[in-house]
Amino acid sequence: MRCSICENRCAVPPGGVGRCRMYTNEDGAIVERFPDRYIAAMPIAIETMPMCHYHPRGTFLQASGIGCTFSCGGCISETIAFHAEAVSGALRHIPPGALVKRALKEGCRGIAFCLNDPTAMHRTFLGVARAAHDAGLLVGCATNGYYTEESLRDIAPAIDFANIGLKGASDARYRACGALSAEPAFRTVKTLHEAGVHVEVSCIHARGCDDEIRAAAARVAGISPDIPFLVMRFIPFGDEPPEREPTIAESERICDDLRRTLRYVYLFNSPGTGYLDTACPSCGKTVVRREFFGPMGARTIAIPPDARCSCGCSLPVTGSVAETLYAEPGMMGGYRFTRALEMVHAVLVCLGVESDADLARIWAGVIRDDYIRDLHGKIQTIDGYLDLVRELGERAGRTGAAERLAGYIGDRVAAVSSAVEGCRRPRVYYSMGSPLFALNADRFEMDLVEAAGGDPVNRGIVRAGKPGVNITPEEFAAFNPEYIFISGFLSAPASDYIAACRRMGLSADAVEHSRVYTLPPGWDFGNPRWVLGLSAIAGTLHPERAVFDLAAEQDRFYRTFYGTDAAAITGNRSFYRP
Image 1: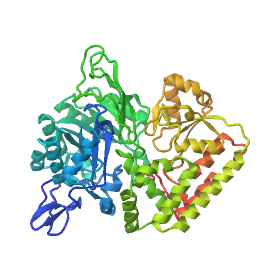
Image 2: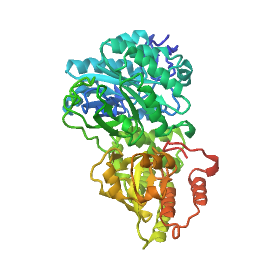
Image 3: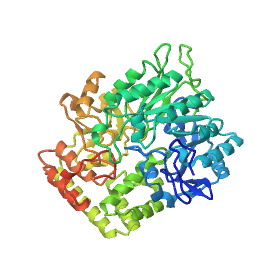
Image 4: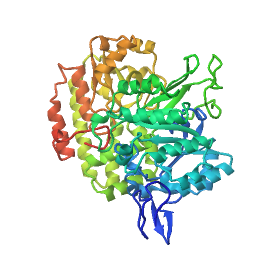
């Protein structure tokens, strides 16, 4: 029997599954394996989904299941999309009525299905859509759009908004994701737009794929040049090679190209970029200001109540602007949830947890016990991180391995602290991606800087975001850092960073003397390898005192906790990969 939900149209034998593994053939009918079951349900601001022109700042209930009908390299939702069965033990059964009740209780405007793809839970999604509309709530989703014509007829009248994630424009790009062709995704964009659904489009920009995103944008512009087009700068997770990641500057140049045919083009995964803002199509004035708010997300920080420019031009925004912005706690909400699971995975790898069964058991407990809610607080200090290692060691039944890892880290921290004791503490600014995006005052990286003998000027920032905030040129000048470190997570080449400072007229001792440094992925956050970054920072700030053989330290860490030589590994932005 063939499944008619996505255009892969899998032949599903009795009791078997299709390629997404989320449906089975039961007594001659295609049914969901995990109906009405969710890995997460929590309030978010709609820009976290993300949507840019729909009920700005509005609070929606994020509903996330497991599984996907695609298998894209570098997927940020890898944990719940590709390892769906491993985390299935953590699923919570929430009937449509209960989900709607939760949304109403939280003061949400509607329900947004995201993180995994709703094509993997089609009938569950339709059931929630009906219940939501009956209660006066809006409903929508983030989807790859790979619906069949039959399932699209179900979806079009059932939803109010959608973010459709395009993989490019060619059949070859879609085949790389396990699909057959590109046409069904563009058909979904056109059908939903013509049905009156508020549609926004996301598209990955990877290095070497400029023609793909240009062609995709041209096809979307042919449907309507007013459809918001969200460029997702590719971040190499999973097994993807780091060479596929474009710099922020490269993705900004692509946005300039796309704005020749589309009026509203936005750049994500690029902290500090001005390409998240909305310019008036009439006079060119900036009307809406946004900032990076975690992977794949944004936060609207300034918008007129009526979404109208001072020149009188109205932006094509659906719905009203919310007066207040929902504050998402810790790592809850959006794709930060998947990063939290990867941080747990990163520790477990160092503890020797290798089997899918063990990983599934631990993940299930972490999610079921709501451990993620408290994780954010645990990872903001060195001592808190060591507590995390020991707690995960207990959950994994590997207390000995946890003590070995915690002891190793503790010894290295003590060695660094001893080396820099009594030194003058130079001013250090910790940034992510772009010069005017500052990491939060209470972030883990500030603890690293202090332990390495520096004075983190970020401590003076009173605002907070995820994982930081945009600052003004005046604030940057007042900091006048002597050293600048760029986060190893969403980074930029030091040369690009310095060039951006000079282009924006940003002056600081660190810029004038080219003391701007980028750390390797995982060396300052998200992975126990931050202990290597600690030595690197100390050696940079105090080269006469903190004299460490970083290559030898790295090799020792890799041999001890990964069982391999560091030289044998090509890392990327995944937290859990060596």
